[in-house]
Image 1 (cartoon, helix red, strand yellow):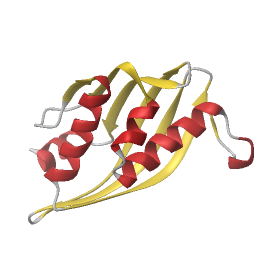
Image 2 (tube, one colour; image 1 turned 180 degrees about the vertical axis):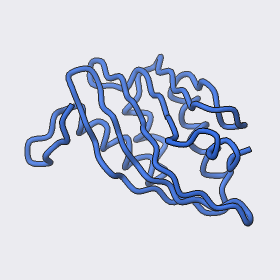
Image 3 (spheres, helix red, strand yellow; image 1 turned 180 degrees about the horizontal axis):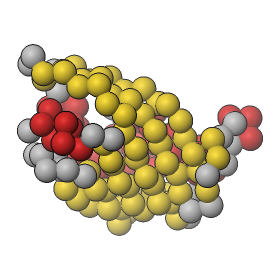
Image 4 (cartoon, one colour; image 1 turned 120 degrees about the vertical axis):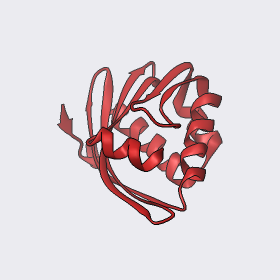
Length: 135
């Protein structure tokens, strides 16, 4: 996989960035346009937000739940890496829930078919710390 150059971006990088921007903007309609009807989105871990979310509606609801669970939540896109079948998005999250704070990197692995995300897998670099924060 290679980091993409915006001047010559691969279609999978364009899709991954569009999904990222739609999520950052809280644009449910734009998120839905990036996802296949049968998309399966998995958030790794053992916390109330972990598990599988199916279909565009399930993914949109999950993303909204993450936003609502935090008092403050910011994320920064660090990189998008692609190949012919998907993309890997590296991002950093800064969040606060009450007095608890989180600074962590995450990977979002996307399987892409026919220009739509069919599978998403979110992985924290420190899953135990991630679970502790969101529990």
